[in-house]
Image (tube, rainbow, N blue to C red; front, side, top):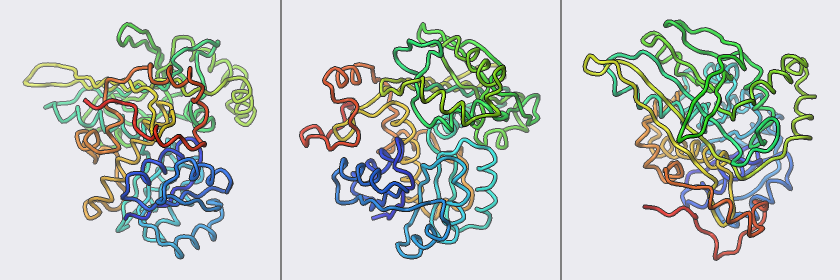
Length: 398
């Protein structure tokens, strides 16, 4: 079995730990500074391959001591982005593969420096965006003789918006604010530049529904470095329902809450509810020359909540956890193929979609699954053990 240490027993860490442990091929330790939180997740999954430990990942000595004592083959950080450089350093010292979910550009640069000369793989920016969206866009680029533009658009949205923001909290509030408030890397006329967040507003229509998209930080991953010299335009934007961007500009720019993020976090978490009834939209568009003609190809997918191990998981949980576990699975199955800093575009989209974890990205889902579970009154209990008869994936495989 592959020994894996997962740091953080939050929304994403809880599902990552279950997916890996229940596969039967991973011996998983779920660590959190809050021992009760980790133990609740382990008890809910109820598998012998998963155990909980109390560990403060911010304590470098404690973290390094854990690596020395238990020698994990890999560590997965589902912690806030600012914790990741310390985890990467511990992984390097502990001779372990490293994976994280960060969208933060500076953190990724730190991980790249730590990974220089490493014999193990250091793979930041896993998950959805950055992560899967970069892999999807990179696959499309292979179909062109000459590239002109690469557009990445991702949205994690409530199925039934009913507030002025037309939004519900579906993942880390700190990560959300970080994306909305930090400079956004893009490529303009073949040069890598920083663009302002919450700018570049545009409209996109998918299956008859109108969305808006605007600049946010981090979602581009390393694509700008990989293709910047051969492509005129590369950019990433977050998708929301129309009107959301204007409200966030009011909060972050006009009311100056971008410079008081602690207050903004409290306001959002006090006023905006969480939901498991969401939908993730993945949209990649690549334009360029094929056989001398200017053409465009798109990858578009909608992913809805799914029942896994008898419990309902939101679309953002499923897509993020599936994205990183598929990458972990590919790396640990081929350890000699990957070492040092590994960019997301080094993974092929067909390999991800064919993977046992990547299959959760399969198209064809609907909101009916989450609606049924909500009506049954069983939606809000991810940390309770499900009845054994329901330990199955709800999605029907075609």
